[in-house]
Length: 428
Image (cartoon, rainbow, N blue to C red; front, side):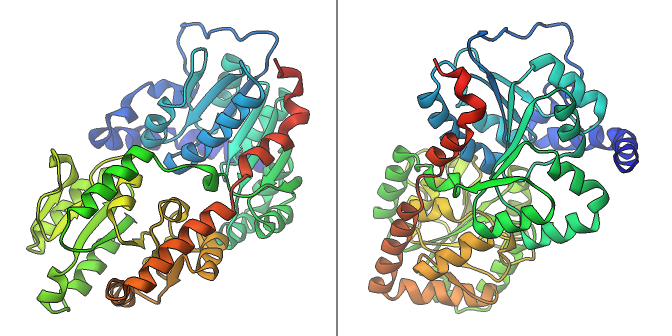
């Protein structure tokens, strides 16, 4: 009865989704591509048939971060099971763009359909995956139920669940319990994630670690960023993956400081979502700040009080360019962003109080000396300025960031080994 009500509400919400996609497409045209797939409409074009000797493994990576984690998992899967047939699905334009680079001949890419029984059924009938791997958090009631009906092994890998998400799921237990119990297996990032997932009835078979630790920064981007940093006369503070409202917090703090102090630092803001690039530029203009956009750089970044990183997929370049970074999403109650890539680039992090989406990673980073926690944006700027004035402390934090990153590698291998019972028949 509960899922029937949910399905009806999801069916009613389809026009809202279409309008949302149309709005997003104005800034990110990819959202206007193959909209019919979102609703289980695929036309008459046939799907390439997979080799009967291998399984088709479907990996769902909703957005950019999940797709980066999927990249290391796919690399390990391909090494262990050569010739594997891969279906990669996403929910966002940034995820799709990142996923394009992961495709090999014979692989498929599609949008994950809206969670109605008809759309999910059409998706599964078209692509016929043997095994489904949902990355991190993407558990949808109808998706789980229809996979079970069609005897498709659906698993949650690199799984995480924050305390906030657990509380929300418990309030909707009439819906969430059946969804989590319906998964074939779950492999969690941490013991704490495993315990929370088990409270929802998930069949947790192990703790494999976080795949994001296995992702290596793009070496060419990192080298380019470090080269640019050497050409700068001022230290660079990066506001990484900033979220709505947080850029205004930073400007408020900077405007309270002595102008000479602010001018001694190069400030670089990289918004988390591409659709907000223009909003951040408008905000800076309204506050009277001069700035330069990454998209206008033809070589060495020009002199300007502020830079805006208005590009996608260049975080390694930005981390290489920076002396340290402020963690976006942690200064407003949004749960923080992933700080693992920053550590892998040797860029220490100053984070605010709100890191519930990455609670374990942020705590570990703080304990390792790779990250520092402060109470608000004002304290973050003060801590950043203090570090810049203490080269030995900054160098130590950079070393600790790299050491913490290296110490947590290996999740991809552990995950593939755990998946072996579902994949062994596909071994070439």
